[in-house]
Length: 150
Image (cartoon, rainbow, N blue to C red):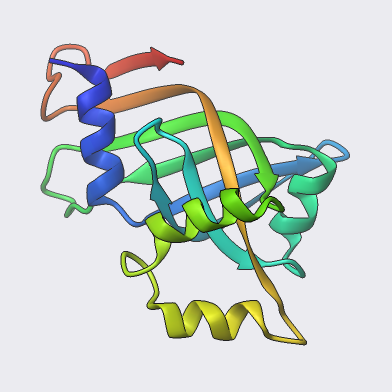
């Protein structure tokens, strides 16, 4: 089984991830909608006023969990990852992130509304993963924990 192909498949199927940040040795976890690109980079769109958005600026080292949709009767499948996150400020980077995110998560009209909000302006962020860990009893019943380093 090709781990990279399986990671790509999971990143296409899932849309919600739990993102963990940490500042001053105090972790924080939140849920964000995400999209990914062909290099396994992950993009999310969030208010600059949110705790996780502020913490990424102070400490770019993050982790995340993406659980595949399932019921308690299903064998578990999911991804954990670690990487470096950043606020996207370059116009080309933002355009690229938006091309993956728009339509998959929110339509253009909603994204434009969030970006122009005065109380809670939203911006795009990116995680460049360093490593993934798959936990997958469906494809790897005898050894469900599989590691993939980038």
